[in-house]
Amino acid sequence: MTKFIVRRSAIAVLLLFVVSSIVFLTVHMMPGDPVLLMLGTDSNPDPQAVEALRKELGLDQPIFTQYVNWMLNALQGNLGTSYSEHVPVMQSIGSRLPRTLELAGVSLLLACIIGLPLGVLSALRRGKFSDLVMTTGASLGTSIPVYVLGYLLIILFSLNVFGWNISTLPSSGYVNFSKSPSAHFQRLILPAVALALGLAASIMRMTRSSMLDALSAESVRALRAKGLPEHNVIIRHVIRNAFIPVVTVIGLQMGNLIGGTVLCETVFNWPGLATLLVKAINQRDYPLIQGCILVMSSVFILTNMVVDIIYGVLDPRAR
Image (tube, rainbow, N blue to C red):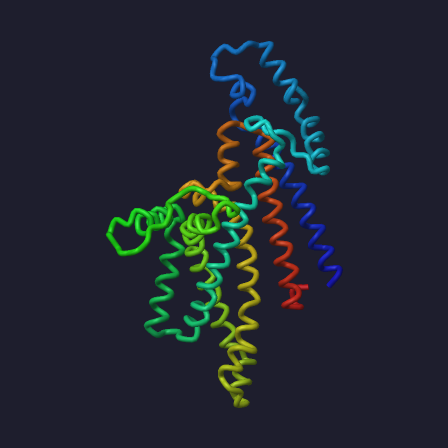
């Protein structure tokens, strides 16, 4: 087991290095000049001012020198200073990342609460009308884009266009938990549900498929033949084996949620890491773009590593 963990950790470190290199090179290939954007939209900027600012930002150095300097600083936890916000990149990311992690975490929790029981129930009632309803709902959930679902939720629960006798929820914005916990959670509900429903549909379908495979296993038939009560067979043997691949899917989805919150944060004006990345791209803020993508990639890679380790613990064959 120790060798397995060390091997997965080494692979994660290698992936981080490869991703950081690709990110740096890709960002510097983007069209547009951040120096001109920082100096304004003047079509004839002062060449001396352009050269001075380029030298100040270190953009006058060869690309390889810039890459080595950035990598050495990144290893020390220094991702540079944002061109647009004029603060350390780590400070900008540090203020936004907890909001994205909160949104992704709550969405994943809701998705598990919805998807896992429905997946088990659908498998146990295979071929019946309730199974048809649940599988149809899961197909719809995976087909509707998150931004469409977000706008639908705003129409139903914020604008209340149908005149339902329910209290409306805020359609956008963010309030710090320390200022008003109730206002904070009210603004978290709609974006979290918008992200959770599609994910819950995927989890439900994966759970149903795994349950059906486990139910048809030879070992389950033998247990039933021995006269073991059905609920013991389901709880102690079927669900335990069926949830091994489901755990993998759930863990991978957590990594996907970090990068998949862009549309949801935009629709609901949730000031997370994804919206910060979009802002940095529009302003050609190289250090901030590199920092955001590196952090998001790190979360994804580390999440995958943890999932692989958990999978190895649950299933010795994976080791």
